Length: 51
Image (cartoon, rainbow, N blue to C red; front, side):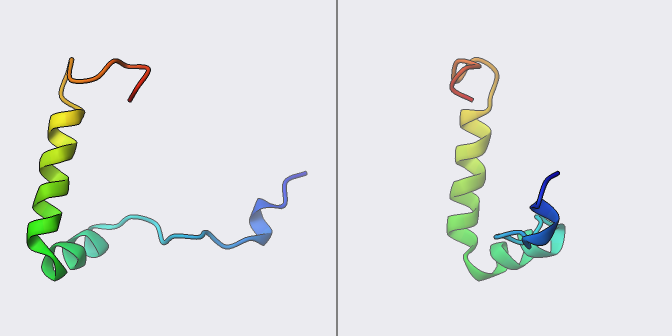
């Protein structure tokens, strides 16, 4: 039997509200992360094993 139900998550679940708040607090950093994600996860950018 798993005890995972006894331990609360370390981080909150990702929601649109959290994303919007993060973007409002640091728009340049948010956009840099979005740009990075789009580049790295583009088809062929990295081998599937790396992703």
